Length: 153
Image 1 (cartoon, rainbow, N blue to C red):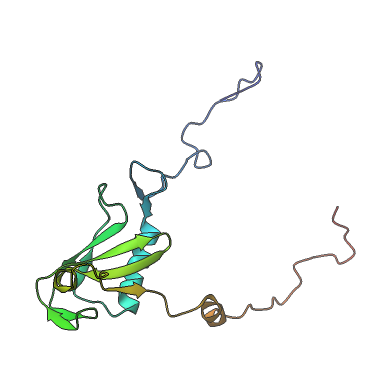
Image 2: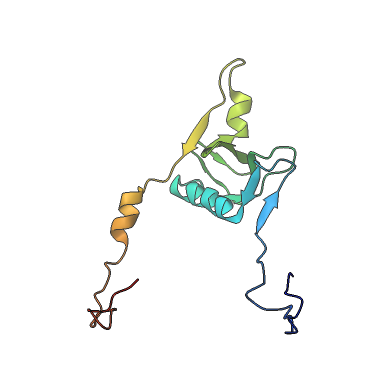
């Protein structure tokens, strides 16, 4: 801490104003590949919106920073291969800011040379829809300016 030479005031080490909160994120070797808790919750929301159930979502590994593994926890219908799965796992791939769901069984059954089947995960609600759901602002009984002739400089 930089202080003037004649300053004898006490330095407070544990002041809440000086406390720097730690960010809650999982970091990898590259700074650009970072999965935050907010992004993890977004992926969970995308799974719910797409009605993909029966999985437990995990954070990506260092080896595959754009792949969110899904572990099967209960039998459910697969939207990609249109079957009931009871033990097969899936995964989600992050490509920039978009996410796609993949099924291992559908990938194993595809013809050689063809693309992997996937389901793009999107939120059905737009920003305008969310904004319209917000409560309307309430008008205060009194003005927040106590003297209307007061000149703020």
